[in-house]
Length: 504
Image (tube, rainbow, N blue to C red; front, side, top):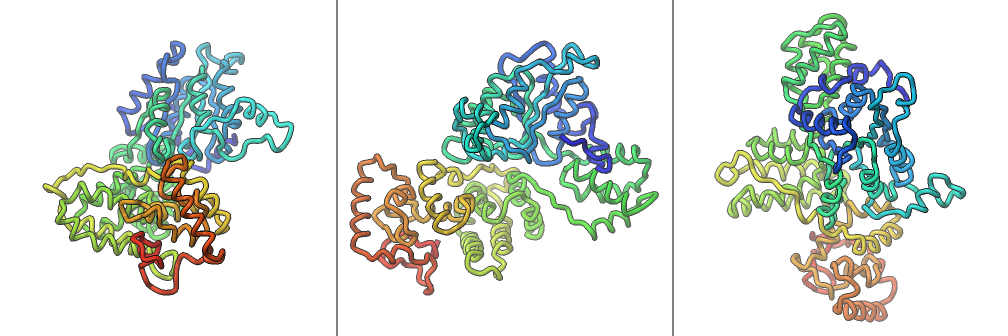
C-alpha cells in the first residue's frame, strides 16, 4: 500500500498510540482489554474486533495506532480493493495464520503479531453463502480466466472463516453494521453468527471538548494560533467528525497566513459547505426533539439517508412517537410526501426530493410526542427487512433488469419495494389478480414470488394454472404494456381490488 502524503494533515497528525486518541473513552478501554489478551497468547473465543460508527471518529486510526504502539506488523485490506473470498483469503486469512515476519528481523519484538485490518466491511455485497475451498484456491492461483472470482463473491462467508482460523488479531471497521448483517429475514441469525466470533464496539461522534483538544494539538504542531471565538465557530459547524475538523484546520490555514481570526472562518464557510452525515437514529431523534421545521430540514439534509428511506423511517416510528389522533392529522402530509417522491419517475423538473423530505419532516415536528417524551423509542422498520429472500427476488429482479436494460441494484432499490407493497395482501394484493405481472411480462413463477408464495405450496399450482390459462387467451402484445398509462385513473382495467403502481 502506498505511503500517505505529508501534505495531508489527517495523515500527518494521525495519532500513533491509543493514548493520543480523543473521545470514546469507554470504548477505548474495552479495546485495550481485547488487545491485552493477545499479549499472553491468543483469546479463547473472540479473535476479531468489529468497530462500528460514523465516518471520521477514529476507527481506522485506532487499528493503526494499536499496531504502531505495540510494534506489530499490519496487513490492511482496503475498501477500494476486491473483497471476495479469494482476495480475503490471500491477503488476510493466510496472513492471520502465520507468525509475524518482524520476529525474524533485527528490529522485531519477541511478542510481535500481525494485525489484520479489514476496512469498511459493511460495503461487502452479497450474502453469507460459502464458496468452495477448491474454487477459492483456484481463483488465488488461476490457470484460466474463468476460474477467477468476481466482485465480493463469498466475501462475508470468508470473514467468518477468517475469524475461525485466525491466530493473529483481526480488526474490522464499518459504518452501518446492519448492512453487514443484511436486511433480509436472516439478519438476526447472521448477526449472531458474527458476534459469536467477534466483539462489537460502537463508536460515537466526538464531543466539543475532544474537538478542542485535537484542534489545539494540530495548531501547536503546525505553529499556528487561532482566536477562541474562531475556534468555537469552526467547532460549532462540526457534527463530531475528527477527520473533518483536521481538514478544516488545514483549509483555513491555507487561506489565511499568520494568526487566524473569526473572519477567516467566515471566509472558509463561503467557499466550502460541510458534507457531513449523521446516523439515521440520531437524525430522527433530533428531528422529533427539534420542534422547528427549519431545523428538521437541516438535519435531514445532512443525514445519510435519502428522502425515500427517511419517509419509511418516519412512517414506522411515528406510530410509537404520536397517538392515534395526531397520526390522523399528519397522515395527509405523509401521503403527499409519498406522492411527491413518486413524481421523480415521471417529471424531473418537479422538486420531488425537496417536497418528500420537507413534508415528512414538517409533519414530524408539527405535534408534540406522546407525553412530551424527550427521548422517543425508535426502531428499524420491519417492512424494510422483508422481501429480500433470494428465492423471492432473484427471478423478478433478473427478468426486469434484462427487460428494462438497467442494473439489478436499480431494480432492487427503486422498483422492487414498490412491487412488494402493491402485492401485499394487507394492502389489497390478490394472488389471483394478474394485471401487473402481465403489464411487466412476468412469468407465473415471478407472480408467485411477488406475493411471497413458494411454488411448493398447494395453492401455487392452482394460481399457476389460472395464470397460464389467461395467458393463452390474450394476445402476446398485451403482456408488454407500459406501467404508466396516459389517463389518470387509479383503477386497474380488471376492476379488481389490487392497487396499481400509479396509485401507490
